[in-house]
Amino acid sequence: MAFGGGGSSTPETLSHTHNQTLAGDGGQLSQTLTDMNGVTLYSLIEGHGTQTNEFTTTSIWTPTAQTGIMEVLIDTTGMTGGSIQVLVDGVLAEQITTQTSTTRLFDPATSITIQSTIGTGIGLVGSYDYGTANVPAGALVSVNLGDSGSKLYLAGNSGADNQAIYQYALSPAYTVSTASYSSITFPDPISGDVRGMDWRDDGTTWVRASDDGAGGGVNRKFAQFNPSSAWDISTSGSIVGSFDFRPFQSGTKDCIWGNSGNQVTSLSDNADLNTYDLGTAYTISTAADSAKDQSLSAIDNQPRSHAWNTDGTRCYYLGSQNDKVYRLDCSSAWDITSMTHSAANDLDVSTETTSPYGIWLSPQVDPDFIYVGSSSSLYKVYQYGTPAFSGSVLASVTQ
Image (cartoon, rainbow, N blue to C red; front, side, top):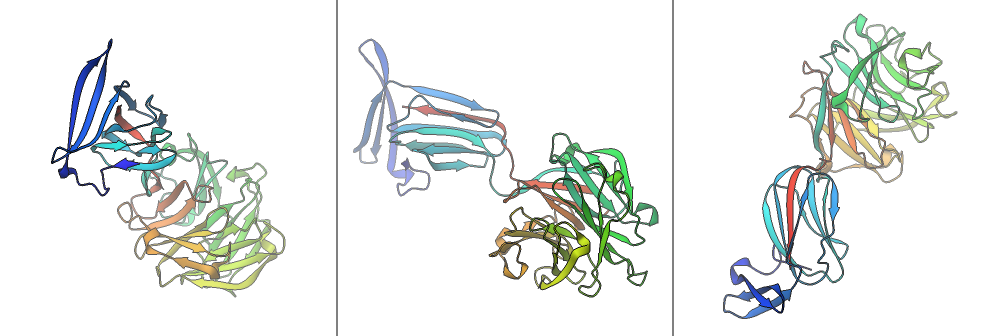
C-alpha cells in the first residue's frame, strides 16, 4: 500500500514530524504523522533507523525493514537512463523514469524491494556512421543483422560499382555503435538494383529483392543464395533459385522470410504488402502468389521496408512520407489481411533522419531493438530500444 504521490490524500493537509528518544540502552526513531488539526494518523516506534543504497548498475535492493509503515526517499537526479521501481508485496507500486527527488510512505504486509532497471517506451540508444568506412558509398537500401547479432549487413544501391552487400562485425552483439567493417563484400551478380535482403536464422541461405525499371523489368525478381560458410556473405556464390514477381506486384522494396520459411512477403513500390507461399520451406523457386495483399498507402504512401517479429503477430512498416516505423498487429499470425494499426504505437525517426530506408528487428516477439538505416547524406544506421539503466541513484528507507 502506498501513501501520497497521486493517492487520495493531499500533501497540504499533512504534517510529518520526526522525534528521537532514548529507550532502554539504545536509541529508537519515533515517527508521527498528523493532520493539520493535530490529530495523529499514525505513530511509529521502530529500531531499524535509516538504510541507504546506491544504484550504479541494474540491480535489486532488499532493505532490512520488510513490513510496516516506512518512508522511502529516492533521488534520481543522477540517473541518465532507465528507471527505478518500487515493488510492494510483489506488486509494482512506483516507477520513476525522470530526474527528480521523491519521498513516499509505504506499508508492505510482506515485502518491499527497490530495483534499477530499463526505462519505458522506445528511444534512440545508439548509431553507426557507415560513411566512415564509405561502404556503401551512397544510398543505403537494406539493414540486416545475423549470427546472433555479431554481424551487420548493409546493402547499397548507388551506381554500378556500389550494387553490393557489405559485412560488418559487432561486438558486443546487437550493438550497432560498435560496427567495424570486415572488408567482406558480395558484389551483386544480378544486373538490377539491389533492394532488401533477409537471412534464414541459421545463416545457411538468404534471399534478396532486385528491381530493374531501366532494363524493362527482366531483372525484377527475388533471388536466393546459399553461402558455403554460414553468415559469410562473400561465400554466397551464384544464384540457386529465383522467382519473378512481375505478374503480381509493381516493383519491390524487399523480400522477407516468414512463417518458418513457408512464405515470403514483399513491399511494392505502391505500398502494397504481398504474400507468397513456398511449396518447399526456404526455397524461393517454389513461390506462388497467395492472392493476399494489404495496401498500406493510407498509413504512409512512401514505402521503404518492413520486418516481422518472430511469431508473426506484428509487422513493422517503415515509410518516408512521415519518417516513421508503424507497428501493425495481426490477429492471425502471418496473415497480412488481419492487420490493424494504432498511431499510438508509431516510432517517429524524423529527428534522426528524413530519408529512412531499411529496417531490422532483434529476434524477439516484442523486439529488444529496432534498427533503421538512413539513405540520405547522413550515412547512418540507428538503433532504437528501451533505454537501459545508467547513472547513479540514491535510495533510503527509514522506519
